[in-house]
Image (cartoon, rainbow, N blue to C red; front, side):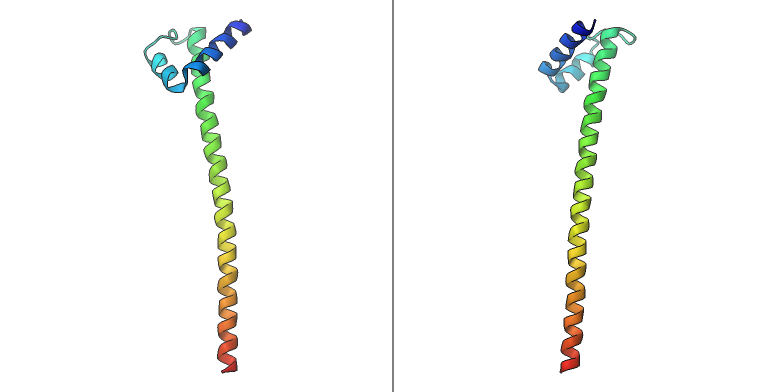
Length: 91
């Protein structure tokens, strides 16, 4: 069965997610409870999960970048305040 499953997975990859989702909705992969239906459902679920994981990773990277920018902006603001105080004291 593993070889047959792998052939089905390769067919799914070749078709692409949109076509697979459409055929799945039309019942072309069997009915709920059948092995092929379960295999396709799992393939679609894994694809959705991979996209969600990628989006989460991207969001984390953006948040880290925003945090770095905020730290730099804070440092610049503090330096500006110090310079303003020094100028006020000197004059």
